[in-house]
Length: 405
Image (tube, rainbow, N blue to C red; front, side, top):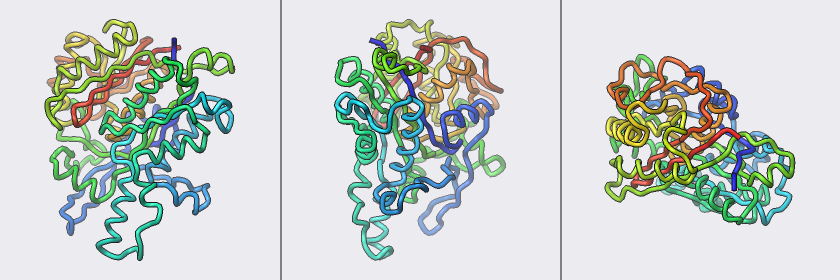
């Protein structure tokens, strides 16, 4: 059974919309900007990829107040994907439509606000909606209510693999006949003081490039020094092909393969063996060989160890310099739980446009000896299949394969 993608939605520091995302990636335009530090809390000036436009501006304040920032991002991305799919305001058969959504920290901003109230008394009381804004299934619950998705609800919180795994599990639900339509994706907004301090303390955040702040994140570059946090959301509408064609929808792509593995080695150090297993599992699930894949959207966080391990694992699966590869986090930042969904939207857009985005800000790369790193500008392609990798702290690895319709 083929599962097709009929709608795409995205919101990130690169702008609102899946087309804006693709445009910026092909232009090499960065959404990363310098952010002030907080000397009182030991936070240094840093780089981040921030969504700059107002969220939920058209919603009544009382309704908007129900949502954490990551929930508002989810609503915006989902609305775009749902509209592109050509579905009515709510699912025509609610018990045959479901939701699968990923997030790493969920409503961390709302949680931090409650701590601030406890210690400072400002505002005068903890927000009464704190619990329902913080819970990891908040965004998926709101989306289920908005579109009347009653068949299934999956809220996946598996660090940087969250939304990628949500999409893969939704693929299996559809194949197994549990639903005809699934709204899938992820959202994340953790650019608050507590979260950023935690990432900075871990030593994996890139220092701010004082001369070129927008280039602070350099995946696969020899001078890479760490990740840059971003926020945003991405959504896709998945349907069985029979359901999509019966209602006259136009498939944008096919979600053809899903591979998931667990390193079971270390909480934060990646393992090439686990990554290889995920990629090979996705190929097996799609009934493909490595030679069928024409592009890999790498996890590519720009950490010294992470990029080296990924280059090793990709070369082991596809052969030395065996497949074109790039890392889009250089431009939109690392969206943690939402990263897999945003990068799958970017991958679909690459196949649709016949142009593969470059891995930005690469000046020199010893890893180019192992992988065919796209640099300098977009590369034309006639590829019909591509893979998107998401490798998470905790050792969770997800590979997704999409093909042209």
